[in-house]
Length: 148
View: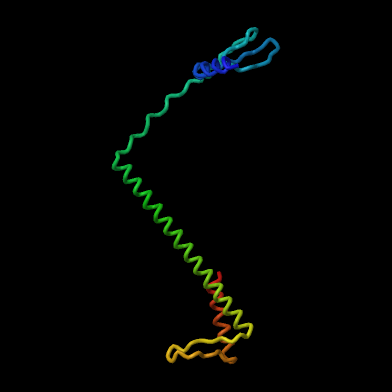
């Protein structure tokens, strides 16, 4: 078995540079092979299995040009990563703002007591009932703006 495999491996390069023949048997059966079996009529197909000459390689870039291309790709990659990170950060901030605005709106609608600090005196000021509808409308606008 090993000898058969070795023989096939040695013949593979020879088969790669051969011609494809059309072999027609006495019963009319057509086969394509590199060598026709005995008792068949051999017809030339004109198909050769020869590796074609590859086109000449493109002119090699100089070391400076390759270095410039590398630096350009590196810079573009860095800029793309920074842009993605900025977009992700903005998305997280928007999500947090949305959650905060919804929580505030839910607190207002539930009738919870809402307290603020007066910036001048530093005292705690509670939201009065007459001011609640205006504050709910403002909170709803905040939810609409932050939760898109």
